[in-house]
Structures are given as C-alpha cells and as structure tokens.
Image (cartoon, rainbow, N blue to C red):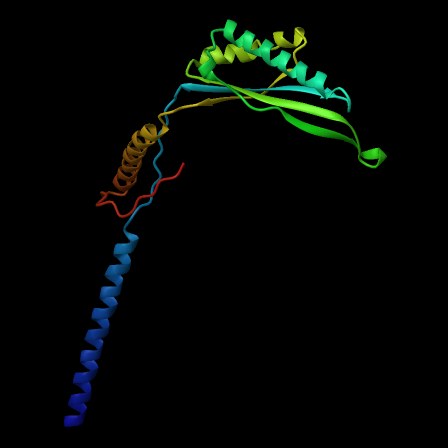
Length: 201
C-alpha cells in the first residue's frame, strides 16, 4: 500500500515538473517568435562638391628619337597648362606626374625593341564641379593643336558622406519602425522594444 502511494506521488510530481518545463519552453519559444523583422530605407539626392579630371599626355618614338619625343611631351604639357590657366584653373589645382617611358617590342621578331612610348598623367581637382566638367568636355580643342592629350577619367566626389550617412541611418530607422507598426496593427497588435538592428548600404 505504501509503495503504491509513493509511486503515485512520485509520478504526480513528475507530471507537474514536466508540465512546468514544457510550459516554460512554450513561453520562451512563443516569446522568441513574437517579433517582426523589417527593413527601413532612406534616400537623399546630393550634388558632388569635388571633381577630379585625370588626363594623359602620350607620345611614341623610335629607338633613336626619344629626345625629340621628350621635347614633344614638354610641348604638349605646356599647351595643356596654358589651356587650363586660360579656363581659370590655378596651379594649386593641378598635379603633374613624372614621365613614364615604356619600351615597345616587336613580338613577331623575337621581342626586339622597336621604340618607346612616353606617358604622363596630369590631374585637375577642385570644388568648382561645373567648371572642371566643362573644361574636360572642351579639351578636344587641344587635339586640334597637335597635343596628344587624352581624358582618362572624370570623377565626382562628395566630401560629407560621413555626416550624410548618420542622417540617413536615423531616417531609415524611422522608416523601419513605421513599417513594423503597420504590420503589427494589421493583426491587432503593437510593437515592443527594439531587439536588434544592423546597417547596410
């Protein structure tokens, strides 16, 4: 008789503990599921405040007239600098790189040297974006003067991206919260505290 009572008590306690553990697990699982994940976005049109125009002066020579080729490089650089000065570009806005000399080879004749190619990069950078853009677009006039000046790139930058990113992040978070509110209200609920947040591009 006593052993049956003891077994019943132990069995009852086991059922109660199992129910408590099961109930606790259900509450935790339900709590984890009671969340909504949303993506917020924010956009803003900006205007670049810096332009960078990179051009290259080039000239090809034979094996014996590299001196003449170098003189032509100097002449073309002078023509470019004159053009830029006439357009209102100051010396501080111009960066002139050294001349690079490359040997041209005849690969059909045992890679024998047949001449040289001279290249020189010139970069114009400033905050007057429209002016630099116009100068780059009109630079073909240098070709009519015999100067071999080629545009390599015309790039635009915005110097306050760090400040803009913080502002956009705040706007994106507000947008995400509004979306979460709309989703929760559609099922007769409301959102609670923020669980997690991450930022992308």
